[in-house]
Length: 160
Image (cartoon, rainbow, N blue to C red; front, top):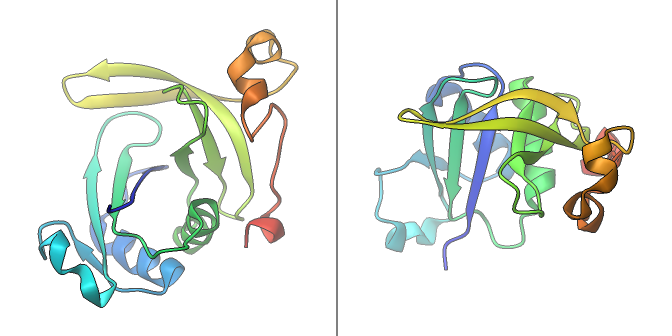
């Protein structure tokens, strides 16, 4: 089975910037989706699909065939540092509005965003921290059942 990672990036970033940063973070070649048949990925290349949407994190990246044993939060922390931009990845709650925010220094923490479905895709906006100070997070079971409970922070050095 080919593993898939879905990330969102702060600001509009060109695929020509994303692929080298991703290759550097993962230590493997990164090719555009469609450049090779996924069944022929024996050379260890990752396929990356990049597109843009409206919203606060308008650049979307899908990574296919990531290296076996690669840890997603470590990879996205390295990627965010190389791009010098914040990134989002889905967390373990399966809530479309809850993500992990990875800052350019590599720090990781849970956040909530408003999600709006449009003809152009999902738009994320109104980022706010997942914290026990928020009545929703304080009383919402999925936040507390997550590996990333409210107010949890993985400092940059731990994510490296």
